Image 1: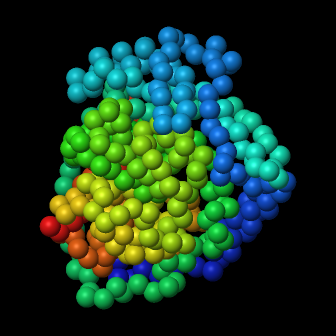
Image 2: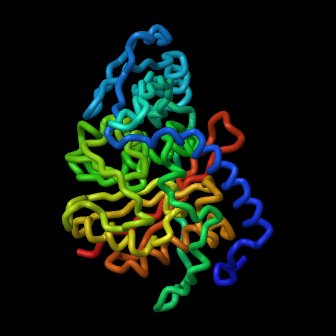
Image 3: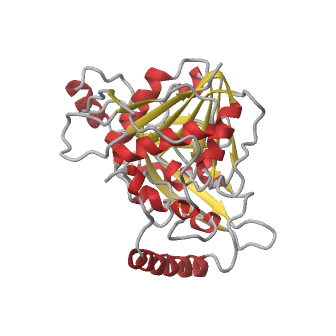
Length: 353
């Protein structure tokens, strides 16, 4: 299918997705009817249940809370023996987190304990080739997009959709690991980094909080951002309402965005802001897979394949302006035990000096 012939979704498909979205929204409203999530919510560690840990614990301190974690040494040892490129970091970190929300003056405070597993991207059985992908589409001088291209099946406020924190991954472990390894090889030590559309994980290597000058983030859910122990600071931000980033000009060496550009209804304006906050010669690293919330992804994205997604993102950068010619890579993990692995692609754009 040629990218120039892409049209919005058909009426029947939209009707089905809208009905599912309405059902979800009704359920969500019932759940949150007594109170909304409070922005002053706290996230802390409940150590009273730490007996679930199977091995000696490590302590990982974030800017506002401490979590107890455990690793499975047998998994790490197996991966290290199978992959000579691995280092001594654990393959994953198990955390027990207590989340308190709706504790405002008119709220009904609730506390919920969660067990979460964070993939470190290290000590895995996969290899991580970086394969260049040619960007061949010639874009016209003016953007060819129509408002219909950016319609979504769920046109409601994104704040409701993302109100409840999802401490889960949206791509599989091989894809996470491939991105982590790419970051390690392509983000210099001492960089100031901004992760837009961020969440409870940013997929950076474990050492980044110690080796980078600053790691900032914007994202939809304040509780998820607070749970991200790699961040120096964060600002909750809905880029579909206001694309302006809350940072001065030329603040960052690198801006990352993980599997989220497909949700933006003003992507060109958002990338103009990325250009503004980047230092001259700084780079944007956008990663993309084939996973998404279909009700929230824009219409033309859902009509494209992986190759067309890369061309589209390249077009966004072109119309944003101020970037050198982009480079694209297929960094999908290779080898290892899994027959299926989520694909992972990168587009890098360097700001003109």
